Image (cartoon, rainbow, N blue to C red; front, side):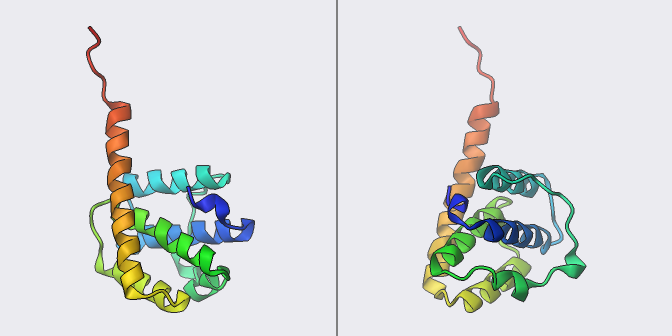
Length: 138
């Protein structure tokens, strides 16, 4: 919904950041993969499942997001990924703190973004239930 507003280079940087976040809690699962694929579809880029944690440089990636608007989009969208597994792991919290510090986003705003992400993640899961449930047609 918001990712289309990112510049091309920012989209690929966002995908790298999302892959990093999805793996930082050592619980990279089906729900995270599904959200990563949704991100790619939204951004109009191919899903790439290969990611090298050892070569990832957080500081370098964060430097790609120059505008305040892009920074807010990144943080909002990452909050969906964080909350999709209903667990805001301490490693994820530390990463979000680093990102908010770098982007100079207040803790109050970050809290609001987190609540938004939690709501979107919940609605996404409910939508999937609606889509995948089969009702008996009379």
